[in-house]
Length: 150
Image 1 (cartoon, rainbow, N blue to C red):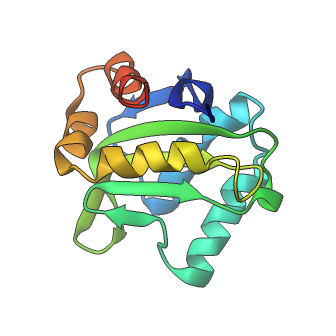
Image 2: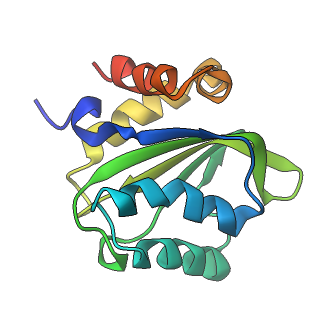
């Protein structure tokens, strides 16, 4: 058995916020739990922002969903996920607000493949993105992810 969602997502890394000032602020907000938990250094925030300036919003994967991530050498200490729900949505692309921000800290290209498979399956159904975006509490968001990956 590979890495499970409950291995990769700790409850303290799930949060709901009302709004972010702009897309850069959203990256600070979304990655901060991983910094606080010692999973990434604060350089990871700067790395993701720098990547957007270079490559555009490469992590806006589907309507209402962003998978924020940088390269392992940009500050990953231990692999982990964080989930931030931004009620008002963040525009990485004009006119396309995103409410579900999943941050991935991966130590290498392969160890998180199992979790990526779970996320891909989960988010292939837009109803699951909507459930996460509209969940009443962070506990509910956490259980949505962990139960899906069980």
